[in-house]
Image (cartoon, rainbow over all chains, first blue to last red; front, side):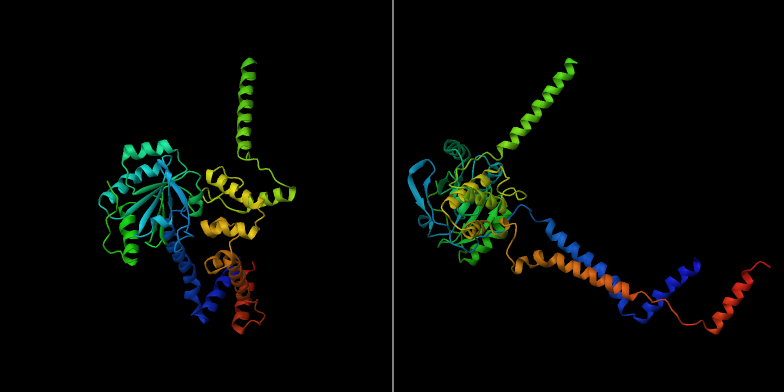
Length: 207
Length: 159
């Protein structure tokens, strides 16, 4: 027994001595793989697994013609919104995160940092109007997407979602989840700067 | 006895309720022109992933969005749109994510060929490892070894 063991351990050692260059790689490879996985997992950790990559970034806003919430005879089209960049915010009273997001939208509107267009998504008209009356209305216009067809054209899969649309109607950015100060500063402001809007223009038609 | 019967009844009622819940998921009744059309619809809704629930296909999902997408696919099947057209309709909006079989392109290369690559690496390293093992030596013993063997053999014997 002891003889066979000693011969086994002796052989690879002499083999390894001959090919000294092969040793480091053999021992380093698992370590390298481990480090690579560590890096991969570390960057994966911060990601929201439910967040989908946006298929519409860089494309033009889909064409639509939808009524204004509470003023159903007035119709708004995609062309009507052009002229200045805006945030299209998809919200609903059935969406808990929308309540969390709402105060920040109000702040954005009050400081006149950007035009906000609301898109009331598959909601009950009266509930939606009460929501705005009770919590304040940060939007320049609220369009009502009652059957959710525009939402599907925008690739919306939940609420809230927010799209940054350029003055000529190109979708620059999409955020699935709430917009907050961090998102505004880190993700939206740089894009606005790129689009040539350095000084944020005051929103029009704000009360 | 009465107690047992009552308990059995409530268990049965619960089972029934659960069954009803299962049936609700598949209740949208779509009228079709023919069987082929119906079959095509059912194949299609199973081909696409629900963007909302992520681990279910459009057929299985109870999400309102899945229902809306089923309605759209139904309308498109009725309008005789091709499978390709329906797939690109969804893909344009929700990305490759909605496809259970994403297209082969730069960003999906790893997904498609990663497992095969790992298998190849594993086979290659196993092969190398097997070949590296020293072959049993057939060379005759040296004089010194012969002497040591002799000594061991003789010394080990109880006299």
